Amino acid sequence: MPNTLDQIIRPEILSLSAYHVPSSIGMIKLDAMENPYSLPKNLRDEIARLVANVSTNRYPDTNAASLKVALREAMGVPLGMDIMLGNGSDEIIQIVALAVSRPGAVLMSVEPAFAMFRIIATFTGMEYSGIPLKADFSLDLDAMLTAITKCQPAVIFIAYPNNPTGNLFDAEAVSRIIEAAPGVVVVDEAYHAFADASFMSKLTQHPNLLLMRTLSKSGLAGLRLGLLVGRPEWLTQLEKLRLPYNVGVITQLVVEKVLQYPDVLQQQAAAIKAERVVMSECLKALDGVEVFPTDANFILLRVNEAGQVFLELKKRGVLIKNLDGSHPLLRDCLRVTIGTPDENEQFLEALQTLIKKPIN
Ligand SMILES: *Cc1c(COP(=O)(O)O)cnc(C)c1O
Image (cartoon, rainbow, N blue to C red):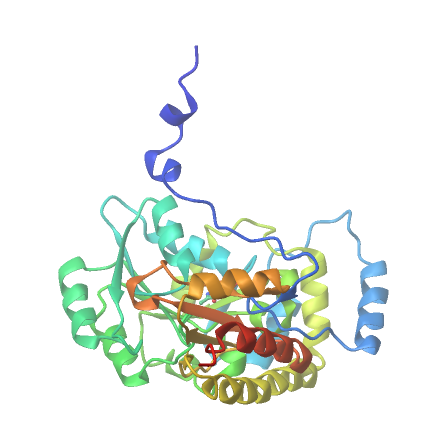
């Protein structure tokens, strides 16, 4: 007789809950930080022709050399730095964690932060330490420095801008953390397309800094491509953990093609940023809504009875993210992704009717 499943599977896996993705069929989808715009017709036609001629019987280029040249140019990667590609940046988080995991090793981040930092720490056998942000979601530098001294984290992940709060942390504070860290620090710039700040140019100053980006939030979520930029000595080690063909041939070809037209995604990001201003203003004008500052393609807000508002929006066909209950600092918080002007208007109208105060 084999052992029972819960004797075989590790206890920390048994107690994890799977990353939940709700069904969104037929809904206005403002829950996952996707770019709401599709690629222009002429570019899609070009992509169709390219894909028609792909040798799908052959393995992709394991080094994705041609794509990396295009990425280097598009992202302004400093000379002397290498690029490692992942099947989304989620996979890169996993690769970094696998490389540093050993009994007792700590993966540190802030709280609230991107949920995958904690989940991946758990399943790669690391200890997770999440240091609370201040109530305004800024970095608690003193708490971070104390925790770094105490836990000696093998790796620290800092999303810049942060998800789910949307803000950029003070760059000076992040630099202090990088300098104080005994291990490696990964600055996760998933929302870089919507922010006007980056640690890319600081890679040369800090020997323990790695910079992560993704194409997902800027418009290519379905292709699954993330990248890690850093010193060759780091990436040489991490490359040993990357499975040889983790980025498919279609992803390589299509991303490279889209990068030949840099204006396309840039103009879409500009439209999203413009809508972000409109939407923030409209939300601020509503009674009973607290709106937090954002440098990303989503807005964090606080309302009364967030859980109820979330469900009522869903009934009206608008899917956003309910963060109430996920962390004490996120009490009654909702996160809404910037959609098209039309989608945003439908969201705002639905929200407005829901939170309207009773007329006495
Ligand atoms: C969305 C997100 C990612 C993961 O993106 P991929 O689609 O896996 O590239 C990583 N970090 C943060 C902070 C995110 O919000």
